[in-house]
Image (cartoon, rainbow, N blue to C red; front, top):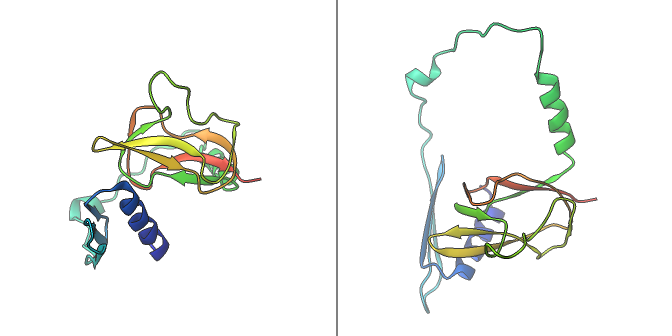
Length: 162
């Protein structure tokens, strides 16, 4: 997590009205506390790297190979996706493509978007957070099903910036 991500997280927490947010990843622990008239506090703690448990380090026996090699197809799709921008989830929650069940979806595949357009809503602790685009382009693919749980930094959309 770089400084820009931390700054964006602080801005997001300030806008959301949450009083405290804790985020723990592999080697970083961040706590952001906000108060009414108090200043915003951010604590960042580097966690020491832990050695992997012994049972995970065991090598799997080699799998017998069949006549088909799927690796080139995966490499080709990775090359195709490399020209696209991935929009990722800024928070953990439930992903919704619509503002409410009786409304149309925010964006469809093939639709052009601009910076600031609402792409989806993520519900976290009964708060519905509108996720806005930080890029302009055309939606190529929606990577998450409606009403599905999403993790922090999980890819949500592929956007073609051209």
